[in-house]
Image 1 (cartoon, rainbow, N blue to C red):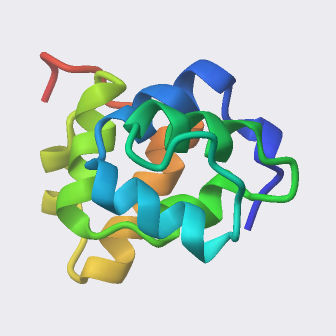
Image 2 (cartoon, rainbow, N blue to C red):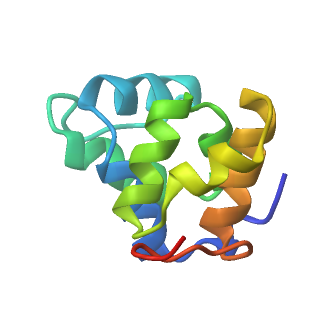
Length: 111
């Protein structure tokens, strides 16, 4: 999908911190990442952010619409603006990934 470095560490961390520990655990299991403490959401976030072979765009592709909305909100973006312009969930997810990459930015408070 993209180079993992398109997202800053801060962006990746903020987006992931919006997810539940259970969801983070499914992501780390999907990529077979080593976690220092599986009970800690922060440990899952650290593992995903530090994983060199994990494309963050692909991680976002694993998320559902509500999870992507949470990630947008954590980064100060308006996910509703994305949904209103897209007809399908797939298009919405693709546009959200572009939003998180910095193109099609819609800052909070505008619209």
